[in-house]
Length: 119
Image (cartoon, rainbow, N blue to C red; front, top):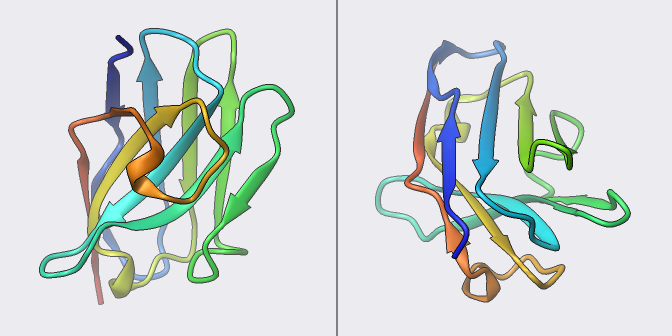
């Protein structure tokens, strides 16, 4: 069983930046970020493959968000720049054994951290 603990959420003005962190208690193949806004389904944000560092992003965050991973610390980061009001959501860290954008294929989930972007 791998436990995930997120941190770094908060309130920021539009155009600002935040950095999310997710510390895992064990090693997994892939780690990812998803988000869920009120009244909406959980959506894929970004993923990083542990062995190669290959990353992928949703079109809505590409060019603004950067995912990175410190394998020695089993920690993944999400640097979020040029934040927009539509980025407001609860952000969840996920980990698993597949390189996928499908939430249902991740085994381990964090508790979520709120990101609020004021316009």
